[in-house]
Length: 260
Ligand code: DGL
Image 1: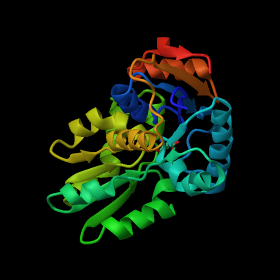
Image 2: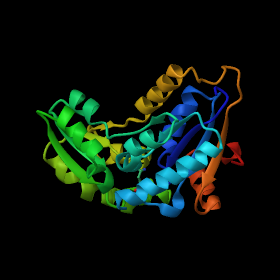
Image 3: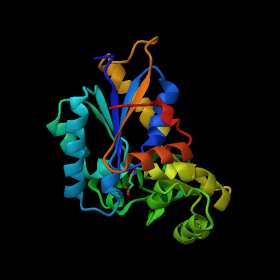
């Protein structure tokens, strides 16, 4: 089992922000990244549709003998995580917007949660608000169109900056000192967000998700040997050449791609 790959999936490039952390901590692991670009974006789709995709992707990953699956997408975690855990024997690591660390560290306890409508409407997020959102001012900001900018590789255009201002200025002008990046695509917007809202803290949970992944692997005694050679396999449901071009824009080396 320790030589088996770790699977990750997202609607597109977003989950690469998690893959980057995982590879940084454990370059000796094998990874399979499933980009469901044919169904991108997940953000506004009904939960049953995303659940269906998550099940199909999981089945495909299990054919490749994955030892653990990271649902590297907040929207898919909201729609499907509980059902996936119930239906499949493999361990899953999922995601929820980092409200807990945000509220714990926000000096004014005034935070904006930037996420897709699917994530903000999900039960997982609502439970998190009930548990950790007490005594804090929380504003939910649906990131309409933002994942699309990232998916196009538009990380620093005038149109992107305009959209960021439209979406977030109201919350920041009313005193939000912390923005939670509640969608894995948004990790790639950190430079643009920092430029647009200097002094506002950004909470990104990719590092925590990577830590949790290795904790779970340790619990199953399933880490790859330290001297193993790592690898990355890509599975793309849509146009794989376009996806490889995105990889380059985001700083990934497509030369590491091997056939899935
Ligand atoms: N990256 C996904 C997330 O974390 C969703 C992006 C989308 O497909 O709308 O929520």
